[in-house]
Length: 495
Image 1 (cartoon, helix red, strand yellow):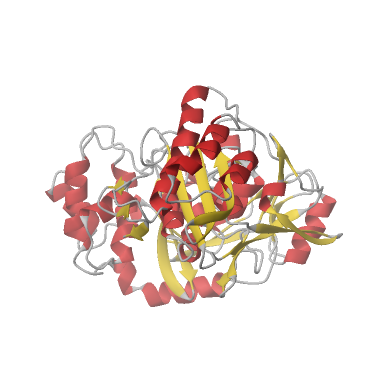
Image 2 (spheres, rainbow, N blue to C red):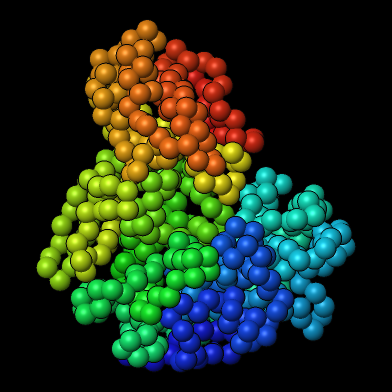
């Protein structure tokens, strides 16, 4: 067992063996290192002022990802390379991204600039062929410019990121990969004592043993939710068990039957698998948080926190996904929809850990649609999240699964409307009316700052009708436009 975390910083391996379990990376940078180029803005992972880059090995190759340091726990950077805005300038001058921002006037008040620089640094190293303005807009959706200077920022990104890799980080990539590989070990990491600790087990058995000994400990995966407990709720979490080093817990794979997602796989990783099921999954996931959030947040964490407005559960429920739970008492599986019992209550026993999500592929006669309704397109919490999976034969609905978030205390299926839709003909909109009438009254949602109860009921009905129109072979009108990326017409997904 190691009693210190290790990470690569400015070409040197740093070891830290004395920090609080909930110490954030941002506080370490600003208060301990005095690296104050990284700014504190919202403190909840929305504005991007605190963005830094983490270098990680993905299949042995170095990948730089943007993350929000304000909600990332310090212990989570074990085994990574930490890069901040202070590190980019070299002997020959500014980094290409920095120079482009200077040349094209991409900085105004300057408070947000370090976060933009670091997001664009990771875009630079993504080395995207044929980079477009829309690609840049998507990449920086998690960075807020309070002076509204986006046009020159995007211009700078296009100027800097279209010319290939030519910086010090690319030049020493092989050396960095070798160092990071050497930091990967099979040791558990325990910083602290028996009463206050940050523990990162390397094996699933050690996870179960430690969680059994400390059932009051807080499990942390991506920290995009727990981080807010610390920064906004000011909660003291004396015992933290971090899941990110558990061997196999982030493993994903696929076959002809479906996809298995390890519970601690990030959204960025899971998206590559889930989008092979249906384009709508890709579209919705691209709107969950930001690049920074998706690089850290996990599908398993989104499920385990039991949020009634989580975006993933409705889609997974509509697809008939199962989850696997394990403890020292054994292993069990259950349908995801049965995991959610009531607001804040899930079917998970003491010391039990969510280990994987199993998502079946669509059969040849199944059609899937998903919609995220928000006040703004990017970086917003759903007022209503809806997902539909219909089995259709000869134009007739044989079975239906519909799941919604934001309309009840848990992600919930519309069982009565599902039953009413069976037997409906997609060629005959009159046969849909019973299901449309039923679904409008099947939920009694709350009124809050995101939407009124009446609006949510109207949207639930409207989205069901929208899904039926899109799936219907008779539908020839365009029903969605997302910028210039995706529209649906003639019942088929067009990208």
